[in-house]
Every structure is written in structure tokens, then in C-alpha cells.
Image (cartoon, rainbow, N blue to C red):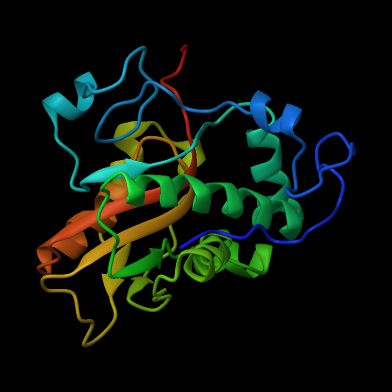
Length: 234
């Protein structure tokens, strides 16, 4: 299938210059922090392609593959934060459109299409504060663009946790123990799922959800997100 861009505006959302067909002009699109070299498993930015990072070699992640177009750097970080914290939904649609194009290229190159997209569930307190789950919105836009099923209810957040941004990698893993559950009668065994979120940092949330799904018999769990953070100091 051919992805059609959402008709958000006829001017670039970054510089206001004319953008005839996309929501970004060609110059701004070229300047985005495209992720080239990356870990083949967790997509951590690396100098070269085709290698696994040291952490994945020491402790292989529960998920199978991360697909992500960008490093978490300017201006993508600003666009994500404005979408997520200021409810700038046109920016979210713009980013989802770019991610859909990235995924379609990956599918064309042999990446297996998942049976369903699963948005990462948001803690109830943060959902009340924000008014929407950005992962759910991204999954809905991706599902429509790529003709993929979206299941917003299969994964459940059964307890609120401290915000992950406040914790180091070990703290994030501890923070997520018993945080998630599967919906009653969820059909998981033998299926291929793709988790959808905005940013992958340590991968602790994705790993916790992948372990939950694979423990219930899922055949494969991938992760689709907008941006990947580098290691601190890189």
C-alpha cells in the first residue's frame, strides 16, 4: 500500500515555508535527526549498522526488534514534547505520518507485519492530567495509514508508578514490576504484536510488556516508536 500524508496544512510546520505535499518542506525534512547506525535489536544509536550494542549482547531484550526513524534530538524532541504535553495533535499526526513511511519501507524490505498494534498503556493519573494517551493516538494513526489492527485494551496498566524520567535504568526496571497485566481472555498465543510508544529511552517499559506477552505465548514482539535516545554523554 502507499501511505498518503495527512492534509494538515500547506505550509511547513517547522519553518512556515510552502510544503506542497508533505507537512514539512524538503529542507526541514532533510535536517531531522534521522537515525542511521543503530543496534540491530534495541536501535540504540551506534557508529555503524548491523551490530548489537553491548547491553543487548550482555542481556538480550525480551522484544525482538525496535523500528524508529529518529534520534531524540532537536527538533524532533521539541515536536514530541509539544504533542505530548501541550496537546498539539497536528504535530503528532505529522510524526505518525513519518513513522508510517519508515515502517512501510521496513515492511517492503522484509520486516514481518504484526497481527496487531498495542499502544503502551498510560498510568491513570497521567491520563487524567494529560487527557489523552499519546501512544494510543499514534497507534490509531499508524493503524489507519498501514491497514493494521489496533487493540487498545489487550494491555492494561494495573498500578500507577513513579514517572520513568525520574529513574535510572535499574530503577526503571524495578518501577515496572507488576505494573502491567493482560486483559481477561486476551488472545495472545502464537501472535505477533508491535508495541507503540513515543520515545524509547532505556527500553524498560517495552521489555516489561514484551516479557508479559511472551510469557502468555506471543510469537514475536516488536517496538515501533518515534525516537530513540542515545546513551548519556553520546
